[in-house]
Image (tube, rainbow over the protein chains, first blue to last red):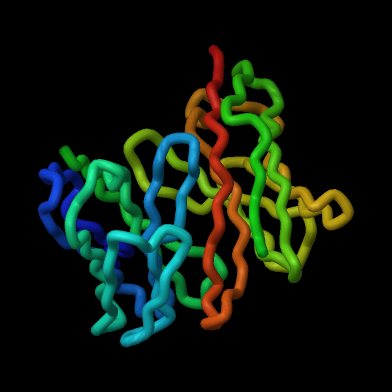
Length: 111
Length: 116
C-alpha cells in the first residue's frame, strides 16, 4: 500500500515550458486535490476532484489544468510555466473528504 | 466562507516545556478541524482531527487539541516538548463546497523550534 505517490520529486523548467506533475493513489479514494505551498502562505488549493470525470477549480487555478480519467490518477498540467509557479506542489486524497492523505511533494523551480 | 487563522508564525519553547499552538477558525457551518505536521522536506502528516464527536481530541506523538465553539478555537497542545517536535504545524478546516466536496482550507502555518 503506497498511499499517494507524486512524481517527479524535483523539477526545473524554463519559462514557457509545459509539464505534467503526476499523482497516483492506491486507496480507492474518491476525493483528490492539488495544493501549492509557498512560504508564509500555507497551502492553497489549486484544483480538486470528487471522482473520475469530475473536476473543479480551487483558490488558485490560473495556469493549471487537471483531468481525472481514473479513480487512481490525478495529473496536474502546467500549460506555460511562469516564475510565479515556482513552489512545492502537494497532491492529496481522501475517502470522504474528512481527513486527507498527502503525497511527499514536488519541488518545482521555474527559471 | 471558511477560513483558519494561526496566531504566531514562529514559536520557540524549551525542551520539556508546554507547547501551545493557536488556531482560530471561521465557519458558517459546523466545521471539521485538523492539525497537520510537516517535517523538513516532507509531506504533511495528520496529527489529529475534530469531526463533531468529543471536543477534546487526542492525536499522535502526545498532541491534543480542544474544540471550543464559543471561542471558535482549536488550539494544539503538548505537555512536554521533545526535540523531535521541531517542525511546521498547520491548522485546517474542512468545508463542503457546492460540488459536495469537503475541501481543506489551511492556515499559514506555525514553525515550532525546540530549544535544548
